[in-house]
Image 1: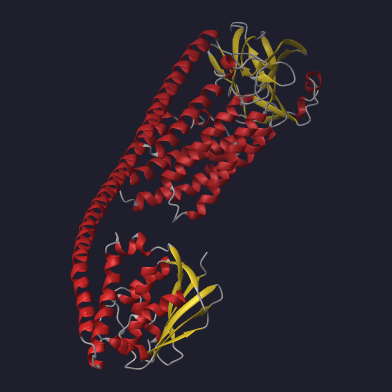
Image 2: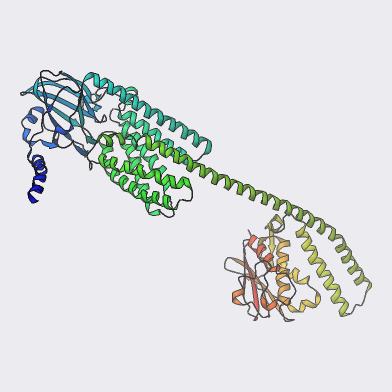
Length: 638
């Protein structure tokens, strides 16, 4: 049994030994085929200081290392040499097309050597900064005559980007067929992406939904990147002297990444629940902007930015899968669940592509194709998901608009009701002024006719006249528009608190004058105020103090405070409990100890509204007389 196991493992050991001890690549033997991919026979030698000449490279044959299946060296800012042995029998054609992928490599020199003699040599590639700028309109492909027998193809690549060499020898006819197919395929992809770009741009213009605009930018610059990567932009729109060192591909990729990550952050990330992911997204935005500027600067600047941006992008792409899984499991709508499902294959395609771009994963035809912004299939899936998501967004917006319309209708109805109330109040107050004038005149007539009134009649006459004056003040306020919210309550003149207090005290019934004591520490206290409103406040506070003092005296005082003047009323009642002092200024609130007293609980509320409109402050404090103290503070008048 053991012998059979070792016998079964023998091919594995042989293959491993060949892998470890083989020093040279096997020659690519050209046969009757039309296309030969050369990746399995590439030997690599790095030239970090760019110092070797071709003659020196011929003497360094032992320093080349076999690369299987083909090299992926990440971001390379030096020179890398490649050696590929070839063998052409006499019966096989000699004319071939040498094509190197990817097409965005900067500059490639090649030499075809046989027996120590250079049979052919040429410079191909996108550009050469040290010489003339752009080398060939059709980059990285050239005609090659391969001699009979054994020969060696040497490639020297100078680049500042991902170094993933995919060389191939193709018969001219096969090359034309594949070129037509590639052009047709690129045309289909670009055409589809342009349609998606225009559709989303119009969607953003019509709906003003930002997701449409971000997706349009993502797809549009992605299409530009594909065209520039294929050499179809620079060759037609830039001459050899314009933007010689700039990199349009880096600029377009920077914009594409910026829009892509903004799109996915807004589409997938819950900013409240996944706040920890936002700083990484902001870091990617900064890298994308730096990539754009590095592309404008040119040279190898962009590769330094991308070398850091790629690992961060891999981390963010992986962590965003948490958001996708959350949407799948807890999404509130079908579009959210579909969005999470659509992101998973997109991320699974994007992460290997980024690993390949960074040089941590061996390249393949699949990874090269996935560089076209995740593929047209992913864009189509995201487009469908985006349409469903925007549908939900528009429905939410419509519901919000309906709610806003309903609220506006309620506000308009309330406004009309208030206008009717204001008109009714104005009418009532206007009508009441006439009987009040009659009552006042009648009292004055009675006082004139009663030449020697007793104390009872004097008190009644005084109370009637005091009530009439108070009612006249209320009517004056009521005739103004909008009550507490109107201009009547706003400061509009210089008011002396001392004079105002004395006038209000004089208008109280004569039998109350002995209970009202005045303690003014200043001769005058001018503030910017409203005479009628302050008079009403003063009257209410003094009347409350008289009501709750049980026939005891109240003290009215005015003086200077730290920033202006104060005016206050102290009584000798039961006082206001500490826990109720913050509530007594609420509308209709009355302290429990005074529930037996008449009133509606509006006097203090109105007083607070008036004081606050005068930029003042009112507070309920313990009184020095043992009851309650209501203190009002105002800034000095201008």
